[in-house]
Image (cartoon, rainbow, N blue to C red; front, side):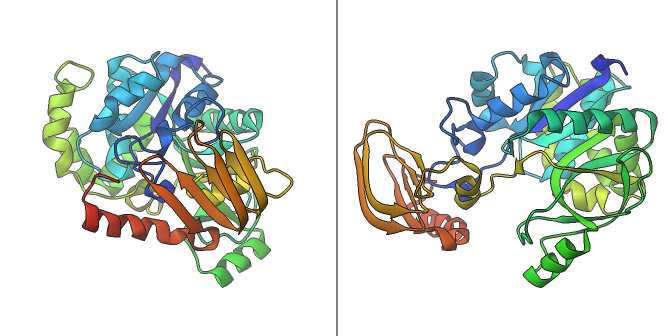
Length: 361
C-alpha cells in the first residue's frame, strides 16, 4: 500500500468547555499542555500520526479563529493544510469539507479522521490498529471506526454493537450504534461482550466517503461541492466562508455512520481516553501516593487526597484537608469544585456568560 495515499485529518475546532477555566474560547484545550509535559494535546496528536504518514499529508480542521494557534503549535504545516470553518456545524460538514478537498488533491486518498484531544497511552498498538484499518479500506468499500474495548460501564460514551464473527482479520461488521446509554444499559452492554466504545476515530477511502454522503446526506454535498474549482486554490477560504454556514449542522454519526450498511469496526485496546473532563484527566494522568494529580509550582499539601490541582508555576499553593476536589487556578479565575459534580461545570460557564459576558469564557 503506497504510503503517500495515507492522509490524516485532525479535528481541532472545539471549545472544550468542560475543561473551563483552563480551556477558553480564545485558547481551547487542544492548544493547552493539559498533561504538564511541555506539549499541547494538538502537538502530541500530530506527532503520533507521523508514524502513519508524512507531515505534508496531515491536515488540521479547525475554526477560523484558531488558524494562528494551529500555525504556532504546528509550524511544519503550510496554509493549505489548515482547513478553517467559518461556523461550528458539527462533524458532518467538517468531514465532508475535508473529503472534498482531498478528493481534488488525490482521488485515491485513504483517510484517517481523529480528534485532537485524546490520550493514547500505547501508541504502537494504536498505529498498528490504524494500519490494519487502512489496509482494509484500501481494498474494500468500507466506512470503518476504531472501537475501544470497554473497561467500565461508562454512560458518557457512545457504544458500537458489532458482529462477533470477523469479516476479515480483526475487522467486524457494525450492527448498530447507541448514543450515551443509561447506567443499567451500559452495564448490560459490558456484560454481553458485544459492544465497544465509539472513539470517534474513522478510516475510509475519500471516494467511498463522498459516495456515502451522496447517499445519506446529499444536502451537505450540494452546498460544499457547488463550485469545486475553488478547492486548493487561493480562493478556497472565501468560497468556504460563503457557503459553509449553509450546511446542515449534524454529526458524522447521525449523517452517515448510523445509516450506512458498509460500516465496520476493529476492536482495539491502546490506552485510550477522550480526555473530555477534569475527572477523566485525573483518572488517566500520573497520580501521587495520595491519588492526587498535580500540575503545580512550589506547593505544600496537608491531608489532600484524590484531587486534581493546577496552578501557575510561579504561585505557592498551600492546601489542607481536601478530598475529591478539582482546584484550577488560571490567574484571572480560580475554580474549586467537587470532582463528583464536575458535569455541572459546563452549566456554570453558561451562568458566568450571562452574568459577566464573554470575558471569563
